[in-house]
Length: 351
Image 1 (tube, rainbow, N blue to C red):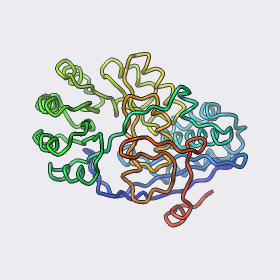
Image 2 (cartoon, rainbow, N blue to C red):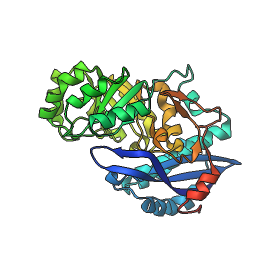
Image 3 (spheres, rainbow, N blue to C red):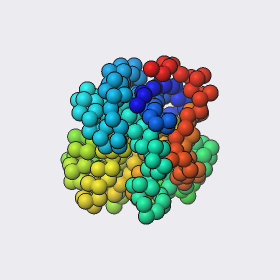
């Protein structure tokens, strides 16, 4: 097996704001695994608030490359089991996810199978993906909605966002609304928002409180009829059991948990607890989105708009069209790189 990588600068179509930061670009690392005449692809974005950098991921990838290239590749699980402990201990779950997703993509291409069909042989029904509206004034949010008609919106809110903002937004769309506070609220803020969330028909609230603030969370759940979804509180497999005590659903993100391999175990465990399931993305290209949407047939909700927000997507694969997940006809995750874009934008060439 041969390992290659590309460091790529994703350009956002518009300025994107959440409670943590504002950004116009997103550095990302695309990993290739080549074996038997086929190539699998995986992606890890360098998210600043998770203290992940492309350079650090490249250093670690170069360190583990000799082992991967000498690995007798049979299936993604075997590879994950052999490299995961080192990568997780060294703080590289994002890189682990890229390698694992590349391994799943490669395995499907080698064997002529599609990942989503292997996960759910009985059908391909998937939930509609939301489109994310970044933090802003009511006018700025409404402009984003007018610019992108969509059946489901996820609206980012901060601690200082006036609740009346949502009432103004609702006047301009009949779409389903989801709210993501990115852990910016406390019980006082959430309680102030609740009547308006109910009035505007909000479907779910994603991570209203900080990870350790389960006291406010438990109190709020007593008065809220709206489903509350764990995001920052559910980063790894080990978090699922605890989240089942405090949340109605979990949001699985491949880079946080370490790839499709652990994500599938999280799906199984969450179902045992009666939790609803969501999978989400950060700012990712079609490489990352094509991997995470392989889970879509198992989910109640999905946030798969990452590549829709990007102006220079370097890959093809799964598409999200008006909220609908459209699977590629290709095997694996159906990912193929657009070489011309990679060559123009590549910051670090292949190993």
